[in-house]
Length: 148
Image (cartoon, rainbow, N blue to C red; front, side, top):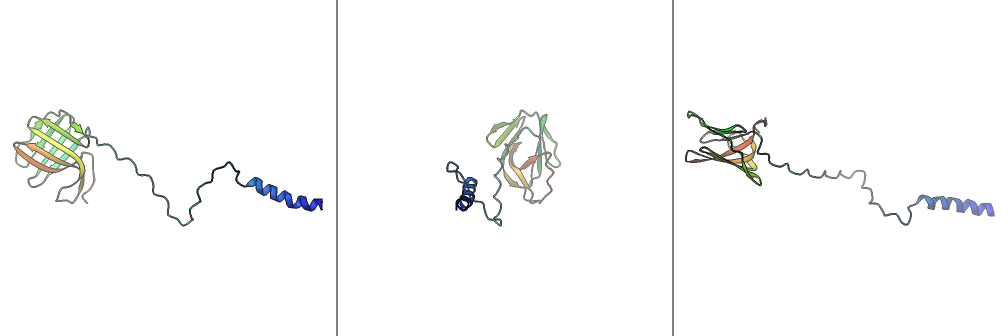
C-alpha cells in the first residue's frame, strides 16, 4: 500500500513542480498559427534636409532652379540664366526659404506633381524672380526616380 501511495503522489508532485509558480506573471496567449503577423512599427519620418543639392522646376511657363551650396541658378528657355550666391536657407519646420540677388525660393515638404509627367516630388516650390511668382515642384538633385 505504501508503494501504491508513492506511485500516485510522486507523479503529482513532479507535475506540480513543472507548472507555473504562484509568483510568476501570466503571459499573453499565443496567437493562432494562421493569424496574420503583427504590423511592423512605423519608422519615424526623416527630417527634411535642405542642405542637400535640390532641383526645382515648373511648367507653363517652363523654368528650373538649381540650389547648390555654391549658388542658386535660375533658368528659363531662351533667356539668360540668373545666378546668385546661396545664402543658405532659413528653415522653419518643413519649409526652407532662400533669398539672394533677385531670386527667392520657398520649398515646403509635401507631395507635389508637375502636371505633365505624373511624377511625385517631395516638395512644393514657389519661386519669385523678375517680378514673377512661379509655382512648381522640387526634389533632391540625386533623386533618380523615373516618372510614374
